[in-house]
Amino acid sequence: MLFNSFAFAVFFVVVYSLYLATMRRLRVQNLILLAASYFFYGWWDWRFLGLLFASTIFDFTFARVIDATQSAARRHCILVASVVMNLGFLGFFKYFNFFSSNAALFMRSLGFEASAFTLEVTLPLGISFYVFQSMSYVIDVYRRDLKPCRSFFDFALFVSFFPQLVAGPIERATNLLPQITRPRRLAPDQVHAGIFLIFAGLYKKLVIADNLAPIADAAFGSLSGSSPASPPGLNLIVGAMAFTFQIYGDFSGYSDMARGLAKVMGFDLMLNFRLPYFALSPSDFWRRWHISLSTWLRDYLYVPLGGNRGSRLFTARNMLLTMLLGGLWHGAAWNFVLWGTYHGALLVLYRLLAPNLGIQNPWRSRRAAACSLAQMAFMFLLTVIGWVLFRSKSFDQILCFFSHLRLNRDESTSSMVRTLLYCAGPLVAFQVVQYSTGNLLVVLRWPLAVRVLALAFLISAALAFGVDAANDFIYFQF
Image 1 (cartoon, helix red, strand yellow):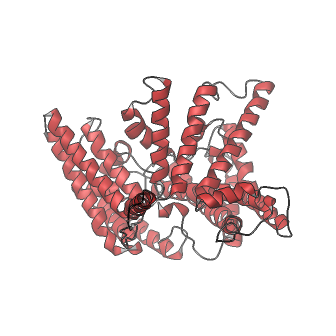
Image 2 (spheres, helix red, strand yellow):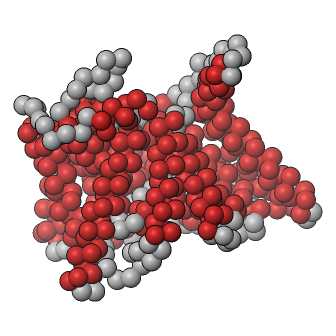
Image 3 (cartoon, helix red, strand yellow):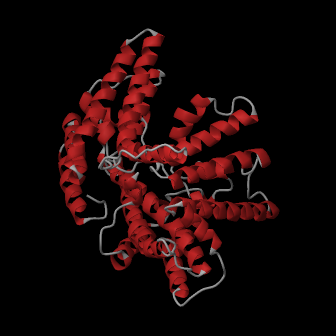
């Protein structure tokens, strides 16, 4: 059930009506949301409801046992059991065939007879998101940053809350659980913000992502097959740019809709994107892109590995390992590992060569502003290169892409450029306003007439230029 589908619109109207009718009955509200969340997830594939339920009941139990245990060694053993169980779920469903086939390939390279043992395993939707969310809850209880949830049903709602269940943001129990366990109220400003976010997200998905997808697919598709074509270099460049805005529109669009749906119900989900293509450096980019994952990796992987405590070599190792695993989190394929390693290398190089870049006020003078714009443009170029690694299906396709970069074109180039400008231009213009004001919801400060016009534009553009078919979100595969 896609956010951009008629089925979801009907589903949400029914759920929201029941939700509003029970505003003074918190437990009933939570049970309605829990039932709706399981129905929403089961709509995709009811077989994986058992996996979601098992992950929930195991981590609920592990957290309570950890909290009741005084022995530090025993608490640590229980935590390890929880982490192993969660990563076991994730590893089996997401990585079993990847590691099996690569292990067999490695053995054959050494001269041994080996064949990959693979299974017909369907990847459960959103497993990477809800496993990380549930696992962080147990770790927080272990660290005594959080008391375990008393109600199993409230915890189950925390794990399965439908707006962010299948593609995030990856919520923290310290943020979402208190909102589940206490009565909620619907403030007008919050509802208005939620409505704007819902339609802004739909605009990003329908108008930007879905219209740019064919351009990216055509560019990268021309590099596929045993005898790839020799596409014009400008088409590849436009295709890479199209994917850069496609993945942003697709993923941030989902996050906007998730936050908007939550807001109209009185919840505040964490911000997942903060104008990432305005970043000045790799570290600045990861403070702006997929914030819920980057902060999760920082708090539960990078810091426990030692963070930046120690030598430069030690810190570089931690950065590379964290980003490599962050790339692997996205999927069982070497291009994701390469993409994560690439961003890890950028973090290390910038830390060594320009440790203070982006910390000072970038707009304090004309010279500083010019320098900052140059840094921003260079970081954007590095980001686009990273997206080429991310989008490519093999090392051969990556090599083919960069070896064909020329300034030649064909009859389709102009049409591709026009579509890119039509789709991405309004977004960039509005984000310049957001960046300059430092307010992502600056539209809510505008006069009522302007706000109405802005909302009308989002709705009419989605209806007029949106792709007819309801297309999956890119991050559903992760």
